[in-house]
Amino acid sequence: MPEEDLLEFYGTECVHCKAVEPLIERLRAEERIEIQRLEVWHNEKNAALMRQLDKGYCGGVPFFYNKRTGKWLCGSVDYETLRRWAQGK
Image (tube, rainbow, N blue to C red; front, top):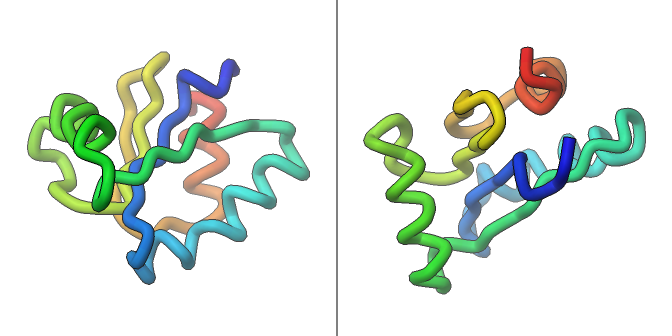
């Protein structure tokens, strides 16, 4: 799946966002799946895109959005949940 289809919106200082970073790296290493990371606490353009896609689902970060399936994840998630979401399941 192209990287531009999988998005993670995060905040630079967000502890929950930092907690999922190793899972994103594992997904890249094991499944060769790339997730485009967009910082929203210091980037208004990215924050506006997150608000557009979020539609009140999460209201915070980390917020994962799969543009191909329309599926989203909120907050810290486990590896299997992240993997299934990234694979469109």
